[in-house]
Image (cartoon, rainbow, N blue to C red; front, top):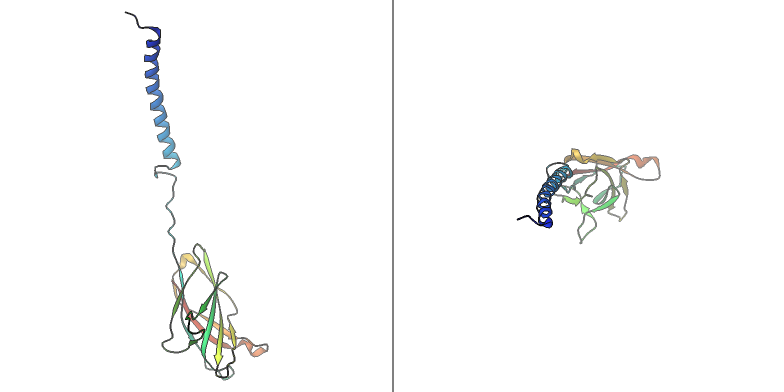
Length: 176
């Protein structure tokens, strides 16, 4: 008995369909490898997010008769345009200077290639004057070279006269 014409074309269509499905699957697999959908080729590992910290360790006051006599300080650290105040206590805006001075840590901006650090300082005298101190430059640290420890910035006493170039505070800090 002869097959009806529809049955013969269906048999051919089935074998063609198997070949088309095999070619499509092979093409899809090749495309997935090329685009990295399986994670084999084309994808880089995600860069881990690292939080760096500025740690203000201490402040030293050089002994100089031409400078105001202060025993408490307030610092402002500027890192990439973000300001951090030291101390951060809710009870006082002034920190005592000397042995046992409390260190504090501040989170730095994530994703920066480098950190530009500059300190400003304020002192409190016995007669309630507030002399101002400033670092005259900016220190820059590449993130790939971190951590750093034992860094210092010498802040100069700022006045309107030529005596404003005296070293008045030394800030010790690190970037973790």
